[in-house]
Amino acid sequence: MLDANFVGNFIVKEMLLGANLIVSYTPWWLWLIIVLVGVLRFTVRKKARDR
Image (tube, rainbow, N blue to C red; front, side):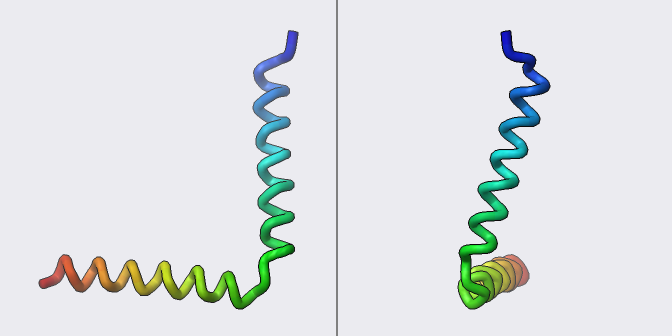
């Protein structure tokens, strides 16, 4: 019988490892684009709300 705590910790560790791999294999310019798109969407939404 597997302990739920053990399974939870295992899943979290696997997710962190996967995230680490994704981060290390993603070029910096792609992160820049993602951040810029996020900022643009955020400002557009704010402007739409202000109108």
